[in-house]
Length: 390
Image (cartoon, rainbow, N blue to C red; front, side):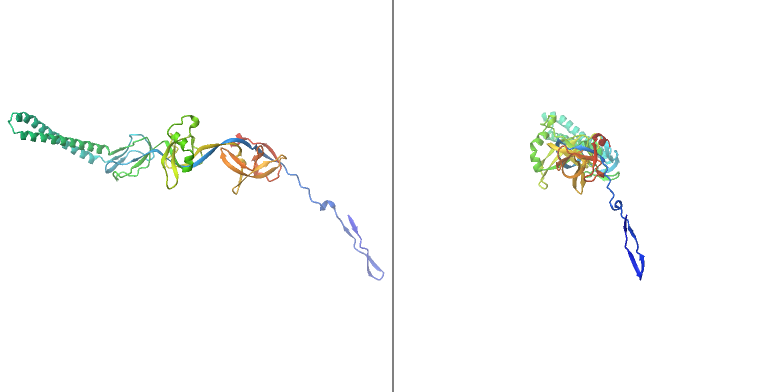
């Protein structure tokens, strides 16, 4: 405490009063700032940046289609009498799909059968005339001209019988064609015609697709094809038999989940498109549960190489901020630093790091959301098994 005295103040002759005594109290403890509490170390899980060999993949957009797609089209014209299958159901080869009213075709068959019978009767008469007149003509009992007429009638009768027989066969076919059967095992799509419609040889009734195996069609550039033309040709010709020489194809479904079964290349189209500069390729995949359907989109992935000794970290250790990527590195003094990195391809649950990280550096894989630059941490090993379970 400090006392300050201002002396006496005169108020007139011989009159003095003591001036105000002001005490100024200062305290050193009140003027100093409160000391900052030390930061507590946050618990984080870390993983070492390691080097390993990773496969190089290329992907192309692909569309699925049936191995065989049969267009069901009538071979005769008539009124649709019945649809024998359920839309979208599995059908077997030879199973009835549609039935056209058979009555007109049955009547036509009966008519040509009658004509066939008349032709056979006329031929029989002509044959009898020839057998009777041949010996008579040899004895000059009848003119030779009559025998010639008999022979001509027999030949004409034979031709008429053959023509009538062909008409019967055609009428029988027309009657059979009133029933339309599936030519393959597969899935029958929704019918495009309804019962009672007049259908004909230009009417597309439905499509039956064989979906096991199913094909994924994709197009690659001409330059990409030329780089691998020899290998692709060997595969298509069946010259690559060893397992390590077979080109496995993976299909990535529209939801991003890989299809469990691998496929193989079965088709390389004959030409390069003059409009797009690409060549069409098809890969077949087993599809006995019909999970993949014609028309579906996805991506095909093929391994095209192997990058050796590249740096990888778990995908969850990489932070994306406005299309920029960074990781949180734990330094030797157990403080953290945010560091920008450049990414390569994604390999399973890992990312390839092409720039910004060194071998053996520890990066935070769990708990980086609560961190800031320079903050102390308590690191422990990152549990990959637990992360996969979660």
